[in-house]
Amino acid sequence: MILTVTLNAALDITHRVDRLRPHAAHRVCEVADRAGGKGINVSRVLRAFGHPTLVTGLVGGGTGASVRRDLARAGLAQHLVPVAGETRRTVAVVDARTGDTTTLLEPGPEVLHEEWERFRESFDALLLRAGVVVLSGSLPPGLPEDTYAVLVRDARARGVPALVDTSGPALLAALPAAPALVKPNADELVEATGRSDPRVAAEALRTAGAEAVVASLGPEGLLAVTPQGAWRARPAERLRGNPTGAGDAAVAALAAGLLAGDTWPVRLAEAVALSAAAVAAPLAGSFDPVVHQRLRTRVDVVPLPRETGETPCPS
Amino acid sequence: MILTVTLNAALDITHRVDRLRPHAAHRVCEVADRAGGKGINVSRVLRAFGHPTLVTGLVGGGTGASVRRDLARAGLAQHLVPVAGETRRTVAVVDARTGDTTTLLEPGPEVLHEEWERFRESFDALLLRAGVVVLSGSLPPGLPEDTYAVLVRDARARGVPALVDTSGPALLAALPAAPALVKPNADELVEATGRSDPRVAAEALRTAGAEAVVASLGPEGLLAVTPQGAWRARPAERLRGNPTGAGDAAVAALAAGLLAGDTWPVRLAEAVALSAAAVAAPLAGSFDPVVHQRLRTRVDVVPLPRETGETPCPS
Image (cartoon, rainbow over all chains, first blue to last red; front, side, top):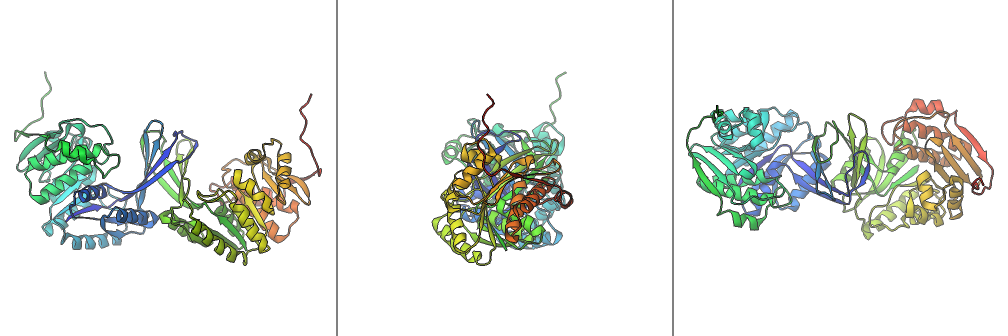
């Protein structure tokens, strides 16, 4: 079973309006609610493939109740720990004329120390049933930066490899706990390391403790730096669509590949194809199965030389 | 007890953002949730005066649960009937730099016939404890235009006078049931009657069946056309602030005055003062008690001649 952790789960609300005009009142012509957060999206993708998966994390209030209901509706097994605060909402206002989206992101509930202790106990029990654990997304207010480091160590103590998909201080603080894999995107790589070359930045994250680094570079595919070697994996075609959730689809494939013991080239090809198929689908956590089938045998996976320095500027 | 009915209750969400820019992602720096809907605002004002009041209406889903919780927090007695659909949300995005507000209004849940039947049974039982009933706001999808007419007749059958504060077809359909009072604002008067002169329009609503009409004319105060005569009531000072909820405060005062058997000039003075005090407070359903005390003895209530025609254009 692949256990996904979403500490800052969300209720993702989509409001379709005729045209968004600041300072006006708008009748919403279409409303859609969906349980969100990166770990939940990873579980959605895994479930679509029939991979056993369980959603854990923290939820609270009426919004938390809506998240639980939507997960049940989607057939996703869940073991969420209640908090007193209200689960955050995200509101995506879609302009029906242009398709453009404006988003409002709430910060999430302040997590209390005793709630966190309760989560760790529950997490430890769930690890006994898990083959891989995925730690995804931002931390809610009240949890310290080293939260993922603590959970990676808990998982390691139970012999469960951990994948971490987060950014900024939470990512940096997780590295000394030696996660099996971290998956930053291009912006997060630069933000975390201050290095503009993805290969150099990825090596820096490994040096800081990550066993393997897979960086998602948007339409350029993936860059992997691992104990078994380094690779670039590129899709055979460029897809247009909704990039939200493409990273979560890649993480789902990487977690499933790790559990199956696939080689890195196989894992990377699957992750690139699934990521591209997610871009072709309208909602995060979903993917286009036709695109996935078409692309999975047509990903260009190229090994890279083991060591590299930053390319010097031409003089 | 004053029974307030909010058939399309709402969870009013306020999102404070640094600056609203269409098509961008915004971190919400402050979130506030509050049970909303016009009847609920009326009960909030009544409760602040220690008038016994009970909130009824329809709520559903996680949003409905949040509405119930907020009413309990506010100490408001409630007897809400559950529906399968999700209670609507309103999102007010406040630009922290300018204070300007952009709002998104969801339509509300589709009410099923059996849910409506259950509400009417519950309403009939509550009428036995009510001295006055207030029917406020828009109708949720699925309920017919004559919904308020049905409830006004139910109340009449129990000897309970009904105040109706709604607009458009729901207002027009309520009139033949002879509500004790309707309270349109200036725009709603014109919309309902097609007449631009408020006095003429108010007389038209009486002719159509309302026993009394009190029109709220913004900073110009109130116009009352009643079986006991007609009046204009104006505040002694103009207040700047938030006009949302000013009409609900006026309705609260008019309901309390009806229950107390006050004369129309006393009711109107109180309604104008409370309405102005609501403008001076930041949230709908609240008012500034200092402004209320200052204004209540200084409202200019002037009787109007009994009959009038539209003022002819100067030739």
